[in-house]
Image (cartoon, rainbow, N blue to C red; front, side, top):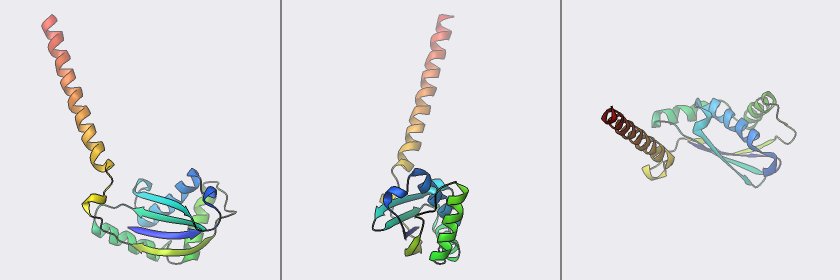
Length: 148
């Protein structure tokens, strides 16, 4: 899924805690964890481009519908959701103004080449490390039993 919206202020107003709050609002609206949300912040007022990763096309369709009916219903709904979250996280809302929803949430089915490489590399590395640990453990057991 992908969406884009414009906020007031400058890019510098959106530090790590503020970005975490934005991700939390999007994740809650889409029914996913914050780890499934990636945002990019660029100048031009402040443009937030968000990608929300889900497991299937059906999940993408459902999350898109939920967001469109909820926090992305209109700029006022997004403003309210962000303001509530910022206040709950003790963040300033001084510069928080939703200027416009640039692109309504859309379900995007990425091709296989666009999946994050970490989704492949991390499990593969974990498997290699586990196999190495098992081999080392077996080698140590053989050495210990040979000495006895």
